[in-house]
Image (cartoon, rainbow, N blue to C red; front, side, top):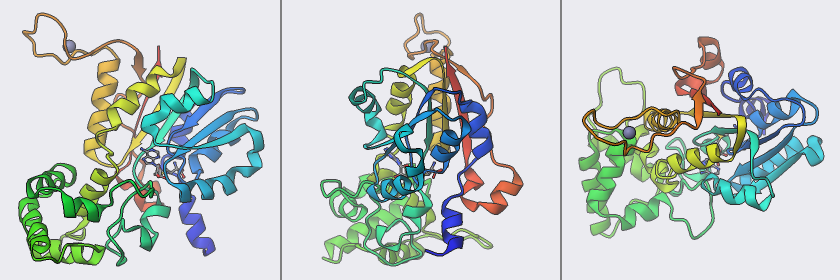
Length: 316
Ligand SMILES: C[S@@+](CC[C@H](N)C(=O)[O-])C[C@H]1O[C@@H](n2cnc3c(N)ncnc32)[C@H](O)[C@@H]1O
Ligand SMILES: [Zn+2]
């Protein structure tokens, strides 16, 4: 890897703001639920000299990378290969009922997105894979397109990609498999979407961007697991413990916002409901009234930061 590429990989999103909200103090224990390349983890471990951090990631390539980067912290740092939806089990295995802070920087890392063979990007032709956890029992994006109904494919592309041409795209995908020529590669899919979407004048983003995002979210069940993870994380914080979540699209941000609101005691039941049924209970104090976004300087230097939103809370 070139120095410039390594430098780019190392750029974590909203570093100063994340540290400010996590507010690490000597002797505290942190979970980085999305270890990735270890950028945020390194910041946290460097903040105070006897902090302990457990990094979780479902991607073995990320774990290899972060392990090398963070080995200087020796016994203060540990890695668990797991899905963060299993955070409760991970903590149990470590005999750690509660921790002082948890961070989740959601989505894919540049290591994943820029690895041609992982199939996350239409910039490289490769099998349509998109699994963050590349274990064989997990279905790839090509598997989903081969097995799901036309209706389900359209729903995924519409809901997770907010793509208006979702039904046309799904129809063409299913036509291809009915002809015995299923869509199997990134190039195949990108071309099919390009032919299905009416391109707006001056449109800067590639027409397949939304469909690729949608499939990635579906393959990794990113939306389904989010609320459960947020609730489990908050349940495993000490009183006064801090939780930071960084999201990259509005679907995720909405779930974080609404879950935090519910857990801060705000009832969202219809006005005439005689008793509260929405699950509101006061467990946290929200630290970010509005989500925190990167400033212009950060987005210029790190394009991935463009759509980042950070929300933070503190356990009561
Ligand atoms: C945006 S990157 C994190 C970058 C990291 N904060 C840094 O500064 O280098 C997200 C990472 O989270 C991992 N990830 C995403 N969803 C996950 C999940 N449900 N369980 C475990 N890891 C997940 C991905 O594999 C990826 O490595
Ligand atoms: Zn309610």
